[in-house]
Length: 218
Image 1 (cartoon, rainbow, N blue to C red):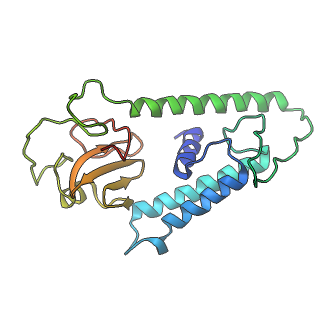
Image 2 (image 1 turned 90 degrees about the vertical axis):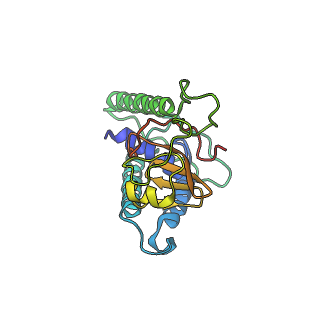
Image 3 (image 1 turned 45 degrees about the vertical axis):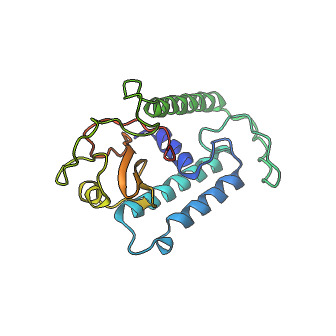
């Protein structure tokens, strides 16, 4: 996976932008690590959650090394943004270096790659125009009134939590209404599946494609 895509996932995990201040970035990282730490999880943490925490730590360390070398986070605008109140002032610009043209070209390539990755993510999140108009936003449209096969090998609307566990395994993070499998997730209402989003980075075992725009869609 390209390094630019990894940093895009890091910012999505922390819910920050590449142009945020270093203090804001560090606070978001500490908060997210606290949420994923095994001590905060009821019962034994799943392998998927531990892998998620390891990847988050690795990407954070790479971003900090990048910041130490370039004075900014990966993908941030080369012109330093104004610091928000309470944030640490941006470091002074270093004296021009002999390899400045090469660094400028590398930054341009990095920014272009981030933009392309963002467009790709946006395309996957677009609503499916071919879906049934009567379906509620954010839900997968599958044949209506189709009976749920408890022994099916793929996810289906109306399936209970036990069926999802049998097919997809334990989620990395779960709540009453949403089970997360990395960037993918399954939505429930009254303990029955009502929709999902299957990311190409962690595809779910589904019998039909899904394009869900929001975890909180009703």
